[in-house]
Image 1 (cartoon, rainbow, N blue to C red):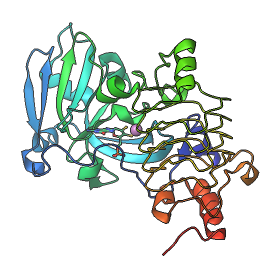
Image 2 (cartoon, protein in one colour):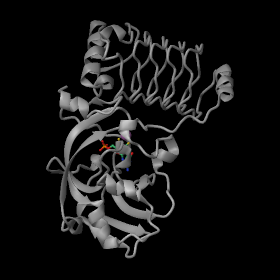
Image 3 (spheres, protein in one colour):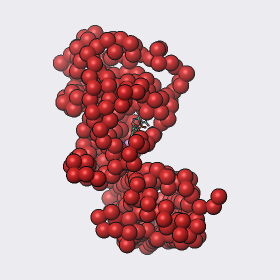
Image 4 (cartoon, protein in one colour):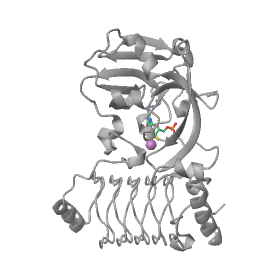
Length: 351
Ligand SMILES: Nc1nc2c(c(=O)[nH]1)N[C@H]1C(S)=C(S)[C@@H](COP(=O)(O)O)O[C@H]1N2
Ligand SMILES: [Mo]
């Protein structure tokens, strides 16, 4: 990485491999048959004149090309994507927000009613773009085409795919991830505003750990480092941003759990079952993964060694670790190199 890229990389982020752009979250809009030509973006709420615009109409407005750095909360960054679109401020000339408009909600045409919001002042200051093209190509459907919003300088969850409505609000309305998953509402990557603080108090945590049963529970940000929790049942539990550093989790059941951005450094995960778990952005530096099952899990943005130190901090795997090539493919280049080599030494990839 050159020094300019380093300066552009917020704390805790790593670069995706050149040319790669991961697809995160939903993969298609509610009605994938809706064609480019029929797509409408409406502007509503606290405005003098509610309005709707087709893609063609948007493209008749002053067009802005803006090169921005993408930073996903699951720790991958992609620098220098040239987006083309109309700036929110230019679009709002037509709808004219009233003095009551303090927030703006970007609503997606998605089956789960996905949305996100920002204060109107932030959205304008960050030069939010209503975009239809990236790097000179129309946005693909999986990346939010035909139209998405782009908020430079915020984690990418503030940029919704398949934008269908912009609503000006007097009172904020939390977006999908912000409400469901405890994602931080400010989302400034330079301040690492990834998640809200955990709401679990010490006593609740102590009781949970004593029960050895986390299954199906929402335990965002739980602090469970330096604990003895062999055979923990954490099946399908929500453990985003949890901290399990150095804990004994041998034979734990994490099947289908969500451990995105969790820290599991030097955790003992011998024979643990992580099958189909969401491990995006999770940190396994120094973890003991001998005999662990990592089949079908999602590893975008996760780490298996500390790049500041070297491979000697690497997670341990052995011949009984279950993993395959497609699972490790989305890793950052450096992280991929480590795990790929270890897996090959042990002939873990069966063909
Ligand atoms: N409608 C919709 N928009 C969304 C999401 C989603 O799941 N649904 N995920 C968000 C998140 S967390 C990220 S990182 C980016 C991912 O965009 P990409 O798939 O084009 O990389 O979209 C954001 N906007
Ligand atoms: Mo994200």
